[in-house]
Length: 234
Image (cartoon, rainbow, N blue to C red; front, side, top):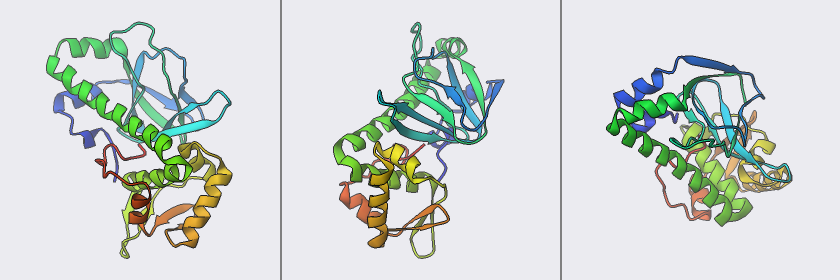
């Protein structure tokens, strides 16, 4: 299931505003779209490729929060405030192209249309709630819970149901990349994945994960069945 702007059921007016962004930037794989501490004066809409959003800890460890795809919005933005800075990092994990909406342009459009402003605030609130649920899972459920939560979110974002009811995760992630989403080490993720494979909860084929028992993962973390829009890796 692809999670993009259309999934949030935005109005034609808001879609028109996003589509009006005519400045396009190309980002090579591995390059930063923006970095923590830079002035947050732009909002980005992904036209192609994938952008990973996350944060670096003081000791240099990376915590990945989401992978954004075509149609997704990137760049936390506080409108009508001066010198707001990004609190997260965004880097391309494959060659990407983004459209740019400048903060001043967005502010002017929202001032002229109160209905549009309310809808935009609701959209941003959904994005913030999605990140908050990620932090909640990391804090409340420990390393194992963080991995299980990540696998559930991957199934919601990239899962393809198979004839035997297993779920094929159609994105290749290294164990280090999975570890970044869990806020733990690659070695810990290796051990937990091996345990899941031994118990036939998951299997691996050519770098892709297949989940055979999603209910087990949900039960282990007392899954609250949050809306898919909040329980995703995007």
